[in-house]
Amino acid sequence: MEKPDLQQLEVKIDTLIRTCEQLAEENKVLRESQANLVSERATLLEKNLLARKRIETMIDRLKSMEAGS
Image 1 (cartoon, rainbow, N blue to C red):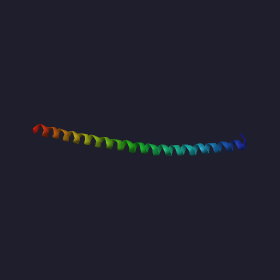
Image 2 (cartoon, rainbow, N blue to C red):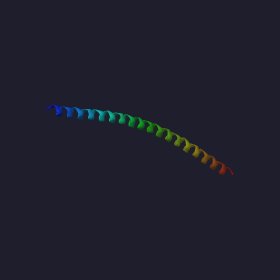
Image 3 (cartoon, rainbow, N blue to C red):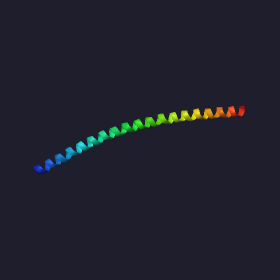
Image 4 (cartoon, helix red, strand yellow):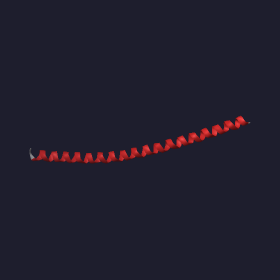
């Protein structure tokens, strides 16, 4: 290989290394974001279930009050 070819190869390798590092960092950020979203979803599902149970309880009470009248 001639010297210019070797230098071009070095530049391309350095570019690939930087690209890999950038992608690894981006991947890390995306995985953290996904973990946060999964956690938030679980919390929202739990709150939704609790609200549903409370509403069902209120409906049952209203029905029993209505039947008692």
